[in-house]
Image 1 (cartoon, helix red, strand yellow):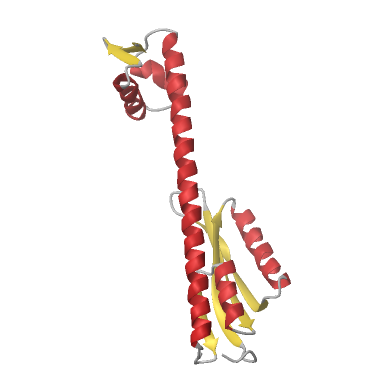
Image 2 (cartoon, rainbow, N blue to C red):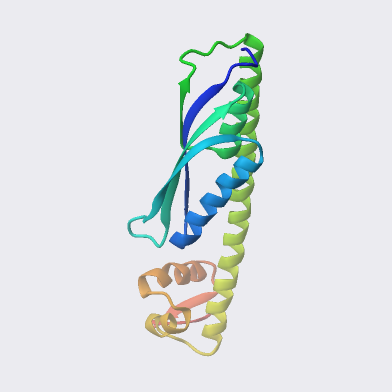
Length: 189
C-alpha cells in the first residue's frame, strides 16, 4: 500500500464508569492525549453520559473523524484506542501487500495472546483474593461463635448478610467440621 495514501475513518470510542461527570471529562482528556500523540482527529462529537440500567454506572461515547497517513497508523489506532466501531470512508478500496497483511495478522495475534495472558493473570489474582476473603470471613464467623452459640438470625446482624446468603458459608464450615449446628444454634466444633 502506498505510504502517500491518506485513510479517512470514523470511529466510536466508549467508556463506562461513575460518576457521570468524571467519565465525560475522562473521555475528553483521553481524546486530547490521542491528538497530542500525533493522531489526526479532525472532528469529534461527544455524547452525554447515560445511566446503565440497574447500576450506578454511566456510559458515554465520542464519535471521531480521523485521518491516517497509512494502514500501519490505522491499525495502531485500533490496537491502542480500541474503538467499539470503525468505518473507513476513504479510500473506497485498500490494497495490501502480503507482507503488510502478514505483519497485521502477527500483530493481531500478539495482541490477542497478550490480552489472553492478562485475563488469565487477573483470574488467578481474583481466585487468590476470593480464597483470602473467604478465609477472613470464615475466621470472622468462628470468632463470632467463640463468644457463644448463635442462631442464624443472631449471626446476620454482625456479619451484615441475609440468612439465605449466610447459610452456605456456615454449611461449608460445618462440612469442614469447624462449626456445628445443634438446636438451631451454631457453635464452634
